[in-house]
Length: 471
Image (cartoon, rainbow, N blue to C red):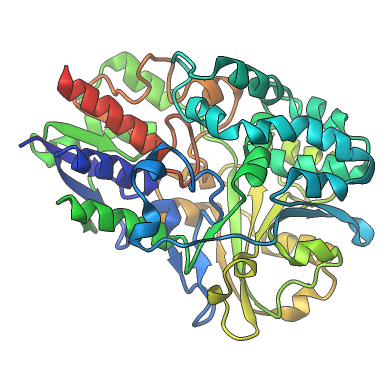
């Protein structure tokens, strides 16, 4: 029987393991932490009964992609739940904007920018299922839907600052700026609109759902499917060298490129090892979990019903904060993402207490304390917020990296989104998953299509590994 070892039990490692096991491969998953899940772990971090997602909280690309179409997570315990408002962006004085599942409803609430919003997102939303068949794969492939992909790519290739000019109002500009900031790139950079266009379209096509009971249920469902096919997971096992794994037919590494190079040692071709060690990581995040009485008292009413709230202010403020972080400078008013999972999933709350998830974009490896800056940004748009806080849990960039070694310097997307790495990660190659060692593949978010609890990096890497077996 063919044997495989997967190192790392994040959603990508587990997705790779599931596909291999379904194809009849004997699979072992080795995880260094005591709990499976990587970026999909959940825990009671502040007070008993309040479930906090430790990293990935919203899953716009997880409900409908080639992996989740082939393996139905809902049959193994995942229940997707959606907030009424997918994401919101408050502005000073109580104003702001909100994105709904419907493009039309979003446009109707954007006043003069309604037509521009529809122009950017309507066609992309209608075609998104087809477009994702292409952009969730490696860049170097023959497109299945070339015209749709080209139209989508025309917006994605723009600098975010240029695409934001399509909007005339402060609300429209801010709503796009908030979702574009997920790219962790200066808004003047080529392709800095890509993440915003993709996630904004996904909000209308699929929504930004949460997993009932916590993102941990996604990992638990994958483990359940893996066990069904005879695979196994072992926790508390730290792998430092491929030599520790024996002689399996396949090895898949849900690790950073540099960690893969370290594990491989002299077995990896020198040119590939150099490329892996040159792989660039992006800015970090500084995360604060709050236990909040009655929820966050946003002045902007739709933000109270939103799953995700982008807290930073205007387009200009968002662009300035992202530019500072990219330069290695800590903004006084950073971009803060607030997750209100209990708006979609009341089971996360305990009576009147709600878990609130917040992180700020900070320079890589930032060693300061950003807790008060994050609290002050929320208080700015939700006066009285400080008075609602009953408990906090803080995780710095160093803490993020300790929690998950793939988060180098607090980089939760496992790699900077500069134009070259958006298109060709972790290196320029026909097979971006191959490490150059026969049967050994990289399957983390450092490979296409990048970050997210969608499992597609692992799914694609497993397809490459199966093709190797067939050859």
